[in-house]
Image (cartoon, rainbow, N blue to C red; front, side):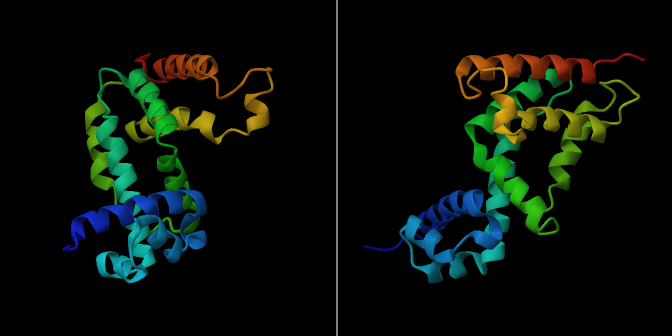
Length: 187
């Protein structure tokens, strides 16, 4: 049976996303990635060149995936924050890999300047002029990520189950309301 290089590459990338999400770049092991991908460890180097390049490919895959699933438009910035929250809940590997990149190798590619420039262009002139577009996008992403980055004991301090659909829905509503306040024109 002939080998399917594209399928092998895809399996390696999926396994790498899971491994890097769990262990970061330093803690990830090529042999575990290969085993999870049902691939030879050498094939990782054939397709990606190095563990660092594989990490960069995983970062690119998850960040661009989020950008495609959650477009930012100027007419619904609060909705964007809510959809970003939904996406982070559904795809926790995105936030985890982004955090590992920031902690371990913030300068490791890829450069997402193009994605962020598109987001900034989409909201130019649509929000409170006292908040610059970069700050506004940072605030919106920060709101969307906050629940997932908050200590579990704080999330449960009110006696609720922080993972229940009711509590997640209540938090989502609160973050959309906050995003609406931040992103509205007040000047």
